[in-house]
Length: 63
Image 1: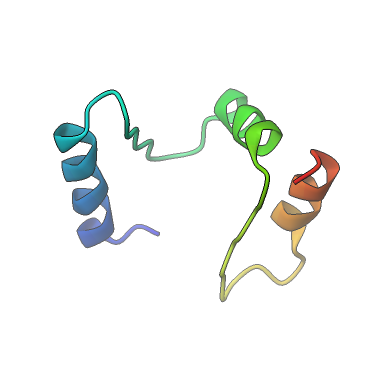
Image 2: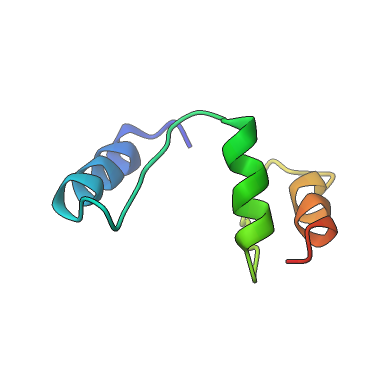
């Protein structure tokens, strides 16, 4: 989201639960394919996604 408060929270969770929580900031195409493919459910509350492209991609992967 670009909100430092959220980034710091997830960085702290990654440090606290090393090996169980991973936080990635920025877009990594290879990782996005793996996330879509492994998802059973895709939720994306958004105020700025008029097309729903991410939701359509998730459907394509079977989420």
